[in-house]
Length: 59
View 1 (cartoon, rainbow, N blue to C red):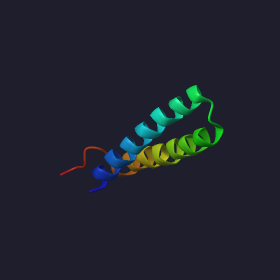
View 2: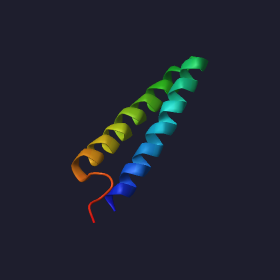
View 3: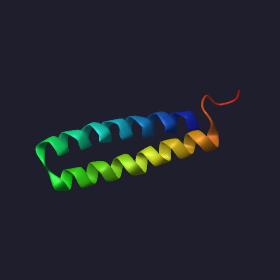
């Protein structure tokens, strides 16, 4: 079950990274802050879940 969290958090972090790059190109400060915050938080959650729970899970 925890592997699904890693996948979901990872996908959100990837989309936030894409949004961060796009807002940097358009020079949008508020969008950059929200996208970068999302990237840091969900990326951290994905890495922490991966470290503590492992991937793939032991059967």
